[in-house]
Image 1: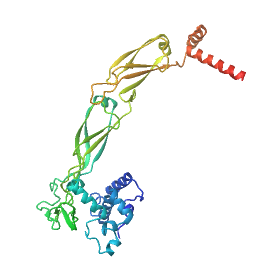
Image 2 (image 1 turned 90 degrees about the vertical axis):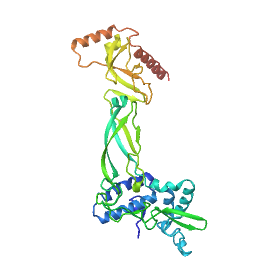
Image 3 (image 1 turned 60 degrees about the vertical axis):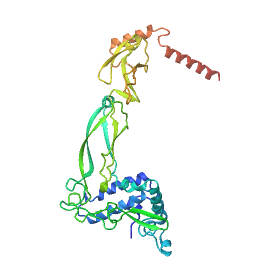
Image 4 (image 1 turned 180 degrees about the vertical axis):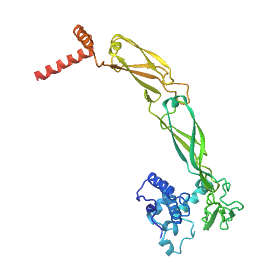
Length: 379
């Protein structure tokens, strides 16, 4: 008796597509024949989870399975169909699959088997620095992926042997059944749509025609990329089964945190500490730019903490554009520490000599406080 597909994938019945996919990948990696050579039990489980995921990843097939169970794919509509003389299409699949094939052929579904044999898309995470995100870079990455077997040139057959034409489908990879006005065409179950039967499988790839190898690829990162930018390398994913096209490789970029600059879109922000003397009397400071240069920022007399100075076109480049963002320098007035006795005396003298208007914000705040307290006393 077949196991429940959800049980095979170690998921609950109401699991989302993402949960199913994640569980399938984990189990497929665990029981893959390459990792368990000669283990018949692992091979059976690998086939079982592939069969389960093939059904549950498809919304129509999953709906049919949730309603009729395994009978949806073994007897058309289950026991009721058997009572009426069985499924006229034999083992051609479920009721939902019949309609999928009918309308798939009408809407260009002839390439459906080809799409099913397409290799998996792969993901590669690449971290770059903020400087590299600004100027761009060429990165060399190593990607493990399924590639065509060199020993058998992807045929799956041992050296000196060739795959044989499938006697069931005569090499077409598909079988047909006619019922009334309809002709249903489906992938051949004997050769799994390849049209070939391998009697002497290649020992290097065990008949799969593909092996896992580490490939070295070059990736061009353009200037101005942001966190989460995705770069697609067409055809650089896993090799397709039975001559199907390879999948794609997606490079996901992450930008490392910078010790000086913080990024906000195309703009950069930098916090520059200045002494309270410079802030009070005015002066200038030097601040860095992301390209390694320096620029002077004039600090006007009476500059308050938190004031920002905008440096045009000193930010990040705009992707695929000649424009650049701006650099914002925020002033952080630093209070001196570890004062000497003489320094403290000078500060006290300064406080005594400070007249009205020297500290306008503090004076304004005290005025508002007096009004507030007076209102509270009257109440």
